[in-house]
Image (cartoon, rainbow, N blue to C red; front, top):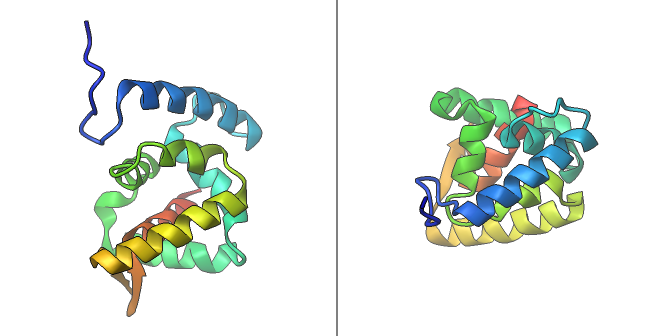
Length: 138
């Protein structure tokens, strides 16, 4: 039998199955093709989480310029999920207010732990930069 333990990106089988179900439904909600990846669905859903999506996209592009190895929606999503596999479902299907709340809490924790990124002279929480990068890829 196949294992149900966490994969290299921290996601166990149950979380992966839930994500696959959420991705199909999420793709339909944002007008993406049914074969859209989880990262593409999350990227398309993020616009409502920002008061100025254009500025968030610009910051995301600046982050990606310095981190070209992350310039893929699925790679970004996997890195955002490394500590919490439930993040994929949140980003793919939650209301914008829930995403904002999660991001606010995550930023506080990452700043406290020193997990930050320098983006054009600004110090951002790593997840904050990655979420904006996802939006930039949408």
